[in-house]
Length: 201
Image 1 (cartoon, helix red, strand yellow):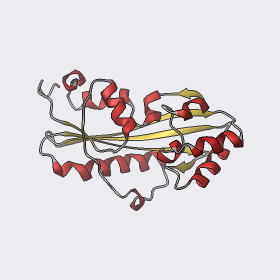
Image 2 (image 1 turned 30 degrees about the horizontal axis):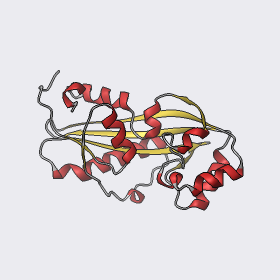
Image 3 (image 1 turned 90 degrees about the vertical axis):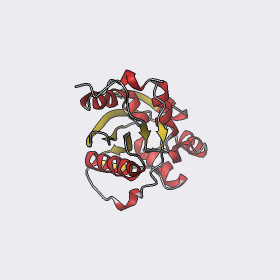
Image 4 (image 1 turned 120 degrees about the vertical axis):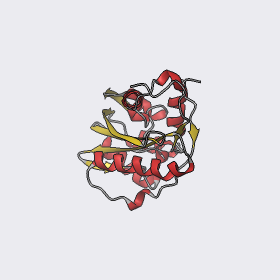
């Protein structure tokens, strides 16, 4: 099914510069509408269910501002030994996390919620990518945390930044680690009947 050649506005319900950069990299120029959804009100133990719920809540918070749009909400967490980590609350927490992450494999879960206001449909998915961290020293950990970069990221690292030097291997979708799986988004758009090329700018 192809809805039509004139595509609705594409809205990113996220303040993440990394997600916006990913979309622009593949030719999409979304309207950015920050949800300001209070994530602390959602307490779920299962990582997949957590990120999918948060992604949906972010998209639904923004959706009432539009009559006819595709609204994308996303949320990411890291798990190490089945323990869920979001953004670290302080440098001290980030240092402690890295001491527990180094030399180990973690999983990045990114929830994607795509609301089609025109068709009154929605698709919610989760991308999972395995990340293998280097066994870095305490000194390197402390220097990395001091840059401030890990404090802005789920899992206390940015693959597209300085943290990319401390990731030895990735199994799965690369962009999912950055916060938005581009192949998964493509599938979701097609499932709703849209051709991604119609959104190219």
